[in-house]
Image (cartoon, rainbow, N blue to C red; front, side, top):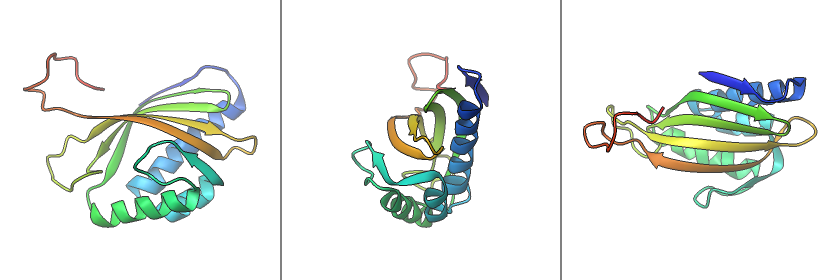
Length: 142
């Protein structure tokens, strides 16, 4: 994983650590309700139209996904932070199925933090990771 802190301030560094811990606890350790309580504001704003808004709703949503997907995990490739924002380039594996050969979805998550160091808002874009044999180039997604 590559981490870039655009501004050399302690809050940006802490925000990166929070995002990394949030991914690990919510997705890899499958403890979504605990993770959202610890790292998100209760009135967390979600911009992904398939995921409900509020921290509690996100915890319930990912709790259901984790229960259905034994192989669910996230691999973090890049993280960039500046001020109240953190961007993460990730690979969500087995988020929509539980197949062993799942290549997953490439994602860019954007998090906005509040003054207390909690995640207050989130945007994302997702793209299915194709079979390299059918890709238009050999650059890879990560």
